[in-house]
Amino acid sequence: MKISFPSLFSAPIQKYRFFFLFGNEETVFERAISFLQKKLLSSLQIKAEVDLLNHTSLSPSLFEAEENPSLTLVPHVTDKLLHHVDQLTRGVFIFTSQKARAQSKLVTYFTESPVSLAIGAYATPLLPSEFEFLIGDLNLPAHFKSLLFKTFQNDYMGLLSTLEKVKLFKDIPENQYEAFLGSFAPDDFMPLLQAFLLKDIKKGTEASSFITSTDIIPFLRSLTRAFQTLFELMPFKNSPKSIPWQKLTPPVFFKEQPLYEMALSRWNFMEIRNFLEGLLELERKVKLSASSLPHIHHELLSFIK
Image 1 (cartoon, rainbow, N blue to C red):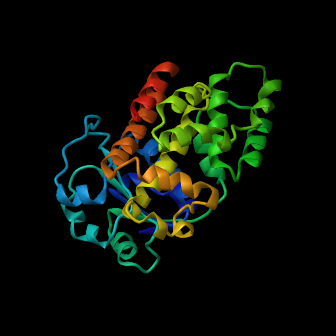
Image 2: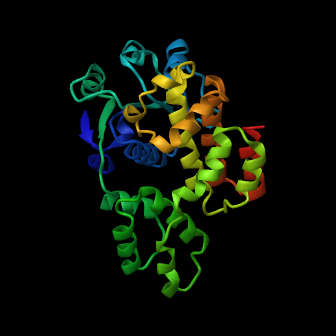
């Protein structure tokens, strides 16, 4: 079956084992993946397509239970996947492709499969159903919920950051809620993002002190996006001058290109992949455990030591 992203929030997703996200909007990919993970109540692991093709009989996840099967994200898949899907007999999978188009083999396959859902992930403002899902059981005044929706309808990450702060300070007086309508500016993360991209432990240690407990989730996701870009650049490691900067998704603008060129010389493919997997695991810990902020900072910095 094939649907648009807005239809995902009313789809009977429990009946499907394979979800295929195609389109050109990375943030919508993230929104869909986050929704699927929460809705399916499963931990998320990430695998490269090449690993999946070489090990189609996957081992059960440590977190897998009979009622909550493992959930595996496989980004940037190609047509090669189609010869192996039938061999994936355990768990639930999310595949993504920013190159697939509506009439491609991948979209056609997952549209016609009775256990698959193809989802067109194109730019979409925050949906009322999506907003209510993110709010969850937070008991917020109706007028404040309306303000939240209007303020962050085109700023998904800003909404996530604000909701984290609301959860942390939920016992404050109702008349102070509107103070949460300002979000942490992504540019404020840049010094620490640069430190990680350049493996600069000294600057990383200094800059990490400015990341608070309410900003850690938005920062982890900014860091993940930066290293997903670096991962996409790895084929150009030996020829950085030929990088198609504006064709990347999202594009890397002129002022950031020297930073990524330097980062290419300091990271290799396996290090980046392990780092991305580590970031997903760290976000899980932040959400599900009582890890202290110094411990989280230590785990982050251990990736570049």
